[in-house]
Length: 266
Length: 295
Image (cartoon, rainbow over all chains, first blue to last red):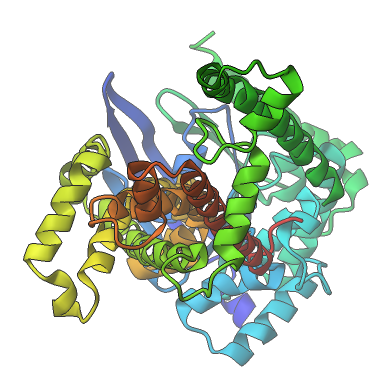
């Protein structure tokens, strides 16, 4: 099996990563000495208060920002090369669907840009709509869907071109708790079905613990990693796993990590 | 439709009432003068009746204007130089030509401004300045210039049409330019980042994101531009020797003391404006439907 052969091989590798923004008030150290390895098929959450660089780190992986120091490899290449080879799909906090395109039309957008032929586009739209449980909604316009459904459509769009990495920047941050729980459950199912490597930025401790195989705790000024937690939870995770001892212990450790990062501040 | 028509009709009714009162009041001086010269003392009802039937009133009564308008539209063959339909068509032709040229100019410049920093610094200030020059001062110069250069002959068109088109486009390109610059810049950083993650090139981000995003701004600007184009065409007709077009009709009527004709031409211009705006509105609704706008 290809999957077992590749299992654990580093997909994302950061060594001594630094990123300084020059602003009017002097340099801002957004990322300082970040070392991180993410293996194939892992579900990695980045958690921390705002300004800790979790989104910046994700954007560096996506080549939307460029580090000022250190090395960063995605699939063994520079992030720019990896992007050219469609290494990742990126899901933003807002669904960002084009209101003048149908749901199917929105999912086809990256496929059109990348030059897939028409029949192939239709096939892929059907497949990813099934994956996110939006079968039959292809002809609807975005305003006809709820916020949660729109975000699922945007995940479908990120999955349409077979990138093996899925980068998600607080994708469910704007949704209410009930919808969020459901989407978290579905995301785990999707991850199990596709075997993608997922990088997931979040503010929520339960969300991070519930979803991840690895939790990266970050702290601000300068943005840095304070703890990396390998989750002992099984791959199969019903929602009530959140009441288990193991779950609560990890959540504790995450909270301690966040507090430690803030210690010198408060 | 019904709940839209009612307020419009109510306002129209109020205007007509005020208009009649004003007509009686403004024309009565003349009626009393005439009566004084003839040595008669007319009663109030006679004065009112007289003020509404003058041949050259200071302010014609609505029904007089309506009659003159009806006569101008149906009383002559539409090819006749006395027909308002003929003159209306001449004005509309120049308006549509100027509108089209204004759209092309406005959109082209807007794309240039959005994509080239140099053009933003050079073109935009001059576009703004261009609109501060009174068009009535500029129009005669454009007419003389395009006649001297025989621009029309070079294009196989009438010189008059060409100069009117230029004046009309001069007024109508500006709202399109401003609307399109705003519209093409309306996508936010997230949407542009998103396209970057798919390695979209400049042409693709223009075609897939910037251009469709600008459409609401474009159609809003068209409504202003079509009105400006009509004003431009009419102003352009004033210094052309007053040969044809609604502007020329108004000028002739005012020079030869024919207030009824002047008012009829004015209302003909209003009807042309109404028709043009209705068509732009229909165009917008069609585009909205195509772009899946929430009804």
